[in-house]
Length: 179
Image 1 (tube, rainbow, N blue to C red):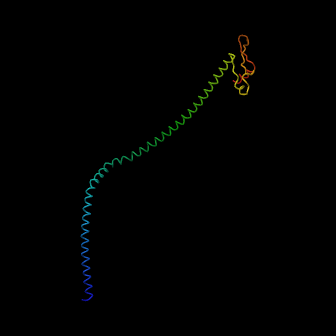
Image 2 (image 1 turned 90 degrees about the horizontal axis):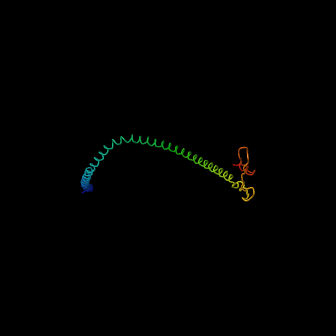
Image 3 (image 1 turned 60 degrees about the vertical axis):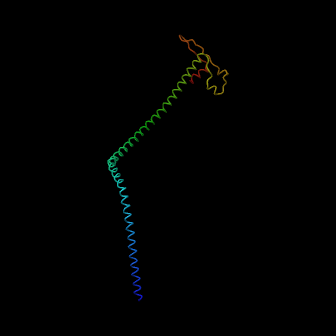
Protein backbone atom coordinates (compact mmCIF):
# COMPACT_ATOMS: atom_id res chain seq x y z
CA UNK A 1 0.00 0.00 0.00
CA UNK A 2 1.22 3.13 -0.88
CA UNK A 3 1.07 6.24 1.28
CA UNK A 4 -1.42 7.93 -0.96
CA UNK A 5 -3.94 5.15 -0.47
CA UNK A 6 -3.43 5.22 3.30
CA UNK A 7 -4.00 8.95 3.27
CA UNK A 8 -7.09 8.48 1.19
CA UNK A 9 -8.42 5.83 3.62
CA UNK A 10 -7.79 8.17 6.58
CA UNK A 11 -9.60 10.96 4.77
CA UNK A 12 -12.59 8.72 4.00
CA UNK A 13 -12.70 7.59 7.63
CA UNK A 14 -12.57 11.21 8.81
CA UNK A 15 -15.34 12.10 6.36
CA UNK A 16 -17.54 9.26 7.62
CA UNK A 17 -16.86 10.29 11.17
CA UNK A 18 -17.76 13.95 10.35
CA UNK A 19 -21.01 12.84 8.68
CA UNK A 20 -21.94 10.72 11.73
CA UNK A 21 -21.16 13.63 14.09
CA UNK A 22 -23.18 15.97 11.88
CA UNK A 23 -26.14 13.58 11.94
CA UNK A 24 -25.95 13.29 15.74
CA UNK A 25 -25.77 17.09 16.11
CA UNK A 26 -28.73 17.59 13.80
CA UNK A 27 -30.70 14.99 15.74
CA UNK A 28 -29.99 16.76 19.06
CA UNK A 29 -30.81 20.11 17.48
CA UNK A 30 -34.12 18.73 16.17
CA UNK A 31 -35.12 17.51 19.64
CA UNK A 32 -34.12 20.89 21.13
CA UNK A 33 -36.14 22.75 18.47
CA UNK A 34 -39.16 20.52 19.15
CA UNK A 35 -38.87 21.20 22.88
CA UNK A 36 -38.57 24.98 22.30
CA UNK A 37 -41.55 24.88 19.93
CA UNK A 38 -43.64 22.98 22.46
CA UNK A 39 -42.69 25.45 25.22
CA UNK A 40 -43.43 28.45 22.99
CA UNK A 41 -46.85 27.03 22.06
CA UNK A 42 -47.71 26.52 25.74
CA UNK A 43 -46.64 30.08 26.53
CA UNK A 44 -48.68 31.45 23.62
CA UNK A 45 -51.72 29.50 24.85
CA UNK A 46 -51.29 31.00 28.32
CA UNK A 47 -50.75 34.53 27.00
CA UNK A 48 -53.71 34.56 24.59
CA UNK A 49 -56.37 35.12 27.32
CA UNK A 50 -54.28 37.95 28.75
CA UNK A 51 -53.93 39.51 25.31
CA UNK A 52 -57.69 39.14 24.77
CA UNK A 53 -58.39 40.87 28.09
CA UNK A 54 -55.93 43.67 27.29
CA UNK A 55 -57.59 44.09 23.90
CA UNK A 56 -61.01 44.33 25.59
CA UNK A 57 -59.69 46.87 28.07
CA UNK A 58 -58.25 48.94 25.22
CA UNK A 59 -61.62 48.82 23.45
CA UNK A 60 -63.30 50.08 26.63
CA UNK A 61 -60.67 52.78 27.19
CA UNK A 62 -60.90 54.24 23.68
CA UNK A 63 -64.14 56.23 24.34
CA UNK A 64 -62.73 57.45 27.66
CA UNK A 65 -59.52 58.55 25.95
CA UNK A 66 -61.57 60.55 23.47
CA UNK A 67 -63.24 62.34 26.41
CA UNK A 68 -59.97 63.12 28.20
CA UNK A 69 -58.88 65.92 25.86
CA UNK A 70 -62.02 68.05 26.44
CA UNK A 71 -61.76 67.35 30.18
CA UNK A 72 -58.15 68.52 30.23
CA UNK A 73 -59.14 71.68 28.35
CA UNK A 74 -62.00 72.32 30.78
CA UNK A 75 -59.68 71.73 33.73
CA UNK A 76 -57.28 74.29 32.28
CA UNK A 77 -60.12 76.81 31.98
CA UNK A 78 -61.23 76.08 35.56
CA UNK A 79 -57.68 76.56 36.84
CA UNK A 80 -57.41 79.86 34.95
CA UNK A 81 -60.74 81.04 36.41
CA UNK A 82 -59.66 79.97 39.90
CA UNK A 83 -56.44 81.94 39.48
CA UNK A 84 -58.39 85.03 38.43
CA UNK A 85 -60.78 84.58 41.37
CA UNK A 86 -57.86 84.23 43.79
CA UNK A 87 -56.33 87.41 42.37
CA UNK A 88 -59.66 89.21 42.95
CA UNK A 89 -59.85 87.83 46.50
CA UNK A 90 -56.30 89.00 47.10
CA UNK A 91 -57.28 92.49 45.92
CA UNK A 92 -60.35 92.47 48.15
CA UNK A 93 -58.27 91.36 51.14
CA UNK A 94 -55.80 94.14 50.43
CA UNK A 95 -58.68 96.65 50.36
CA UNK A 96 -60.11 95.19 53.57
CA UNK A 97 -56.68 95.45 55.17
CA UNK A 98 -56.34 99.11 54.24
CA UNK A 99 -59.92 99.83 55.40
CA UNK A 100 -59.21 98.04 58.69
CA UNK A 101 -56.06 100.10 59.16
CA UNK A 102 -57.97 103.30 58.45
CA UNK A 103 -60.77 102.22 60.81
CA UNK A 104 -58.20 101.52 63.52
CA UNK A 105 -56.67 104.96 63.00
CA UNK A 106 -60.12 106.60 63.09
CA UNK A 107 -60.95 104.61 66.22
CA UNK A 108 -57.74 105.84 67.85
CA UNK A 109 -58.50 109.44 66.89
CA UNK A 110 -62.09 109.15 68.17
CA UNK A 111 -60.80 107.64 71.40
CA UNK A 112 -58.30 110.46 71.77
CA UNK A 113 -60.96 113.10 71.06
CA UNK A 114 -63.33 111.46 73.56
CA UNK A 115 -60.57 111.32 76.19
CA UNK A 116 -59.65 114.96 75.55
CA UNK A 117 -63.32 115.98 75.75
CA UNK A 118 -63.84 114.01 78.96
CA UNK A 119 -60.65 115.49 80.41
CA UNK A 120 -61.79 118.98 79.45
CA UNK A 121 -65.21 118.46 80.99
CA UNK A 122 -63.57 117.04 84.10
CA UNK A 123 -61.27 120.08 84.32
CA UNK A 124 -64.23 122.47 83.96
CA UNK A 125 -66.19 120.59 86.62
CA UNK A 126 -63.19 120.59 88.95
CA UNK A 127 -62.67 124.31 88.38
CA UNK A 128 -66.31 125.03 89.02
CA UNK A 129 -66.09 123.08 92.26
CA UNK A 130 -62.86 124.79 93.13
CA UNK A 131 -60.73 121.67 93.01
CA UNK A 132 -58.57 122.34 89.97
CA UNK A 133 -55.61 119.99 89.78
CA UNK A 134 -52.14 121.27 88.93
CA UNK A 135 -51.51 121.58 85.22
CA UNK A 136 -49.41 118.73 83.77
CA UNK A 137 -47.09 121.22 82.01
CA UNK A 138 -46.17 122.88 85.29
CA UNK A 139 -45.53 119.54 86.98
CA UNK A 140 -43.31 118.49 84.07
CA UNK A 141 -41.27 121.71 84.48
CA UNK A 142 -40.39 120.63 88.00
CA UNK A 143 -42.76 122.79 90.06
CA UNK A 144 -43.95 121.18 93.23
CA UNK A 145 -47.63 120.48 93.80
CA UNK A 146 -47.56 122.43 97.08
CA UNK A 147 -46.26 125.73 95.63
CA UNK A 148 -48.45 128.77 95.49
CA UNK A 149 -48.71 128.85 91.70
CA UNK A 150 -49.87 125.26 91.37
CA UNK A 151 -52.44 125.50 94.17
CA UNK A 152 -56.03 125.20 93.00
CA UNK A 153 -57.60 128.53 92.11
CA UNK A 154 -61.13 129.28 93.10
CA UNK A 155 -63.54 130.88 90.74
CA UNK A 156 -65.21 134.06 91.90
CA UNK A 157 -68.50 135.21 90.45
CA UNK A 158 -68.47 138.67 88.89
CA UNK A 159 -71.59 140.72 88.73
CA UNK A 160 -72.87 141.82 85.38
CA UNK A 161 -76.03 143.60 84.35
CA UNK A 162 -78.34 140.59 84.29
CA UNK A 163 -75.84 137.78 84.36
CA UNK A 164 -73.26 136.44 86.71
CA UNK A 165 -69.85 135.67 85.22
CA UNK A 166 -67.06 133.56 86.62
CA UNK A 167 -63.63 135.08 86.48
CA UNK A 168 -60.31 133.37 87.06
CA UNK A 169 -56.97 134.63 88.21
CA UNK A 170 -54.45 135.50 85.49
CA UNK A 171 -52.58 132.17 85.94
CA UNK A 172 -55.77 130.31 85.13
CA UNK A 173 -56.41 132.32 81.95
CA UNK A 174 -53.16 130.98 80.46
CA UNK A 175 -54.34 127.45 81.23
CA UNK A 176 -57.63 128.08 79.40
CA UNK A 177 -55.78 129.24 76.32
CA UNK A 178 -53.88 125.96 76.25
CA UNK A 179 -57.06 123.83 76.26
